[in-house]
View 1 (tube, rainbow, N blue to C red):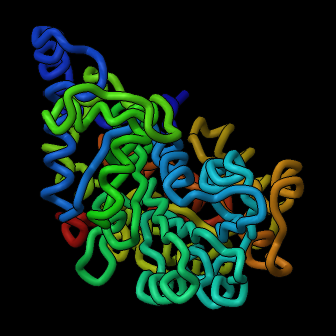
View 2: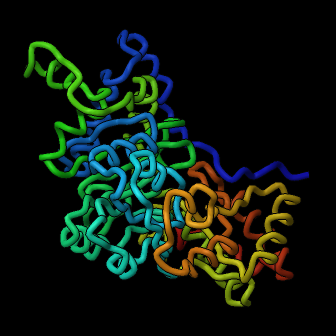
Length: 393
C-alpha cells in the first residue's frame, strides 16, 4: 500500500531550531523579544508599512482591526460569506451587524460591485479577503471605502507574497492581517501579524495590542510610566514563535517559488482532464496571479465532489473541501444578513475541492495525486506526466 500523502505538511527550512535556541539563550521568551522585533522590522521593510505588529494569530489581528474601527451596536461591517469565520466574528464581538456579500465567480473574492450596493450610512468597515492568495480589486474597494468613510481591512491570511499591481497584498488598505498558521506558506504553527498602513493609526494599534496600555511608549522613553488608556487585549506571540517565523521569512521567496511551481504543474497536467468536463480549473492562474498558497478544482455538483473525496481518501490522498458559507450558518443568521441571494458562494461551497500542496512535496508525490484524479474520472494519466523542464523555477 502506498504511503499517505497529507493535505499539508508545514514548511521547515533549517534554522528554526537554531533561532529558537538563540531566543532561549537571550533570556526573554515572552512577547516583543529580539526575534519579534526582527520579524516586525523585516515586514516593515518588505511591505513599506508604517508599522508591523506580530500577533498570536490572524484572528488576533482581525480582532485588533475591529477594535480600531470603533464598531459597535448599530454599525454595519461588509464581509464576504466565503471566508473563515474570524473575518466576520471579530466584528460581531464588538456588536456590529455583519452584511454578507457574494463573491465573484472568477477569483472567488468579494464582488466589489455588490460591496458598493451594500454600503449604507451605517457602514463602518469593509473587510476584503484575498482568497487563495489572489488579490481583490483593491482600487475599486479603496474608492468605495473612501466614499463611505469606512475602514478598509485586508484579510491577507492566504496572501503573503502576493501582489496587486506591484503592491504587496496586506499593505494596500488601511490595515492588513496575515496568518502564519501551519497551513500557510510562511508559518510558525500559530501566529499572525497586523500591518498598519496609516501613520495616524500606529499609536492606537500599539495600545490595543498591549492590553489597552501605553506600554510601548513607556519602553521608548516617551512616558515615565504606563497605564490603561483604551480597550485592548493580550495579542502578542511569544518570542519562540517569532524565532521560528524569522527563519521562515528568510527563506520565504524559495518557499513561495516552490509552491508556485507545484501549482503550475497541477494546472498544466490537469488541463487535459479538465477539458473532458470532469471539473473546472481556477479561472485565474494561481501560479502567477497568486502566491502558490492553494490549488483547487471545481466539481460539477455536490454529489460529484462527495464521490471524489471518498475515492481520494481510499487512495490515502488528503483532499478537502473548504468553507461552509457564513451567511447560512447559525451564528451568521444571528449576527448578520445576506445582501443578495449569494448564488456564487452557495455554488462554490458545494463544488470546490482543495488538492494537497506543501513546499516539501516532491514531483513524484504530486504525480501520484494527478494520476489518482485521472483514474477516478476514467482516463489514463501516463501521456500527461512527462518532462518537467517547463515548470522549473
